[in-house]
Image (cartoon, rainbow, N blue to C red):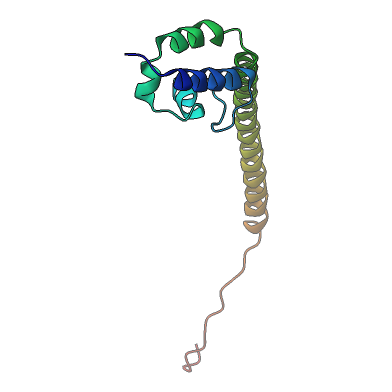
Length: 132
């Protein structure tokens, strides 16, 4: 069972729009789901169009939209790598800041303890009224 000529034409037009990167009804990703949605036909109808499916598979890799997708994928990979490096550097720097803060607090507490331990403050006895 195949599709009618008008349906095949709608699928061809949808394929051309998607491969050119000019979708009208979808987000433009090069998927078969977008192909049938762009043509405004059901998925089962697309599955009954073997000539369209074969053309889609053969033209997919060489299309301008596929080249843009590859470029986007490469850019995303580079950005993810940069992000991972930045996060690792941030963790390293945060560890150094934490260590420095701990050293500063320990030094300050040590200095405070040495100064306060040299001063002896006697306790005064309260008078209990018996003359003691």
